[in-house]
Image (cartoon, rainbow, N blue to C red; front, side, top):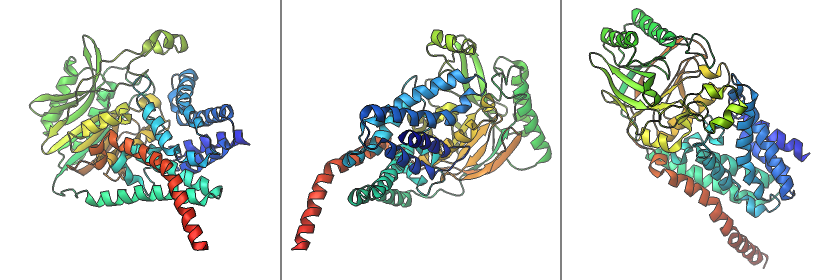
Length: 489
């Protein structure tokens, strides 16, 4: 029975994420996990947590096997499951210690975002909660805050099931206090100035073919995006302030390829509109993943080089071992990371570029968005075909938009592109693997969210809340017994 509960719990938690996006099953999944662990010794709890982790990460991360086979996927599932094992340290029959469960889960998620190889934050519970009624709490404490609330709701439900009324009320009160703080904080955030906006054309040009070799034909992806952009302006006369293309939309180095450079310059000169492209630059030390602002009559101006590279995708840790496990490892060329955050300035807009995998990096997101008033997510989803990866990435972007209180433009080569407001609502959205354009007058947000102001302190504070409650509970129980005695007298 416990084995079935643990497996069911993991699968249910994966259903909170795309392609199912059932945010409300997350607390149910955690309750199932807690029940499976109840009154089990440490070894059994460890085995059950391992089963839970495998049944959670296996379906969630199956997209990683799309073109490279099962071995890298299974290794990733194994590694992420190992990081969940500390959950077994809390004995669920000790109901007072279960109060610490939300803090422990958040702590594990923080570790996962930093370790190993720079971290892999995919699958944080908070990233599944963009449609929940408490999603705005991300502007207070980021995705970790949402994870904490889901876990706190879960232990409250667990205590109610076990008829531990006092503990259920205590954990419910913890959730209520956090949500109350969120509501107060929301009303303190100044409204945006409607007159400050930028009209954006986001171009999803598509790729010749999905897969790892989507750009093996020189200039094919560039030609697609150039053609879609030119066709839009032949058919429409709308005033546009800025064009944005996705990561890898320019599939050859625009600095060294004369045809691409001249074509880009001709495009912006003819329509008198700047463009932000995603390109791979070739340097003497290795390639770089870049976001470049290209202006009429001027050419390339600001350039942001991706700082948080994708392990096993843009560089290969443990290369000798990886090549033994997968034949694709030898094809991975190590990229050179950037060293500083850069924003693209177009009129009043200060565009903060975030390139694909950088979305899961909390600190990098804070530093880049602190410099700008509009978030631009440039991504390439052709690598993962028609899998759920693009939809999962879009949900992460929605949470980041709430967290940083920024409107976000997420533009993909062939995945799902969207324009998202600062409350995480999708204003426009493309179909997957279609060539489409999105246009919107995007407001520019200048206020910094509470989450960005607090930084890592927000995670520390929410971890300390249940710890404080853990030590406070004996006093509260003693006080409650005294009150009962007096009432009986």
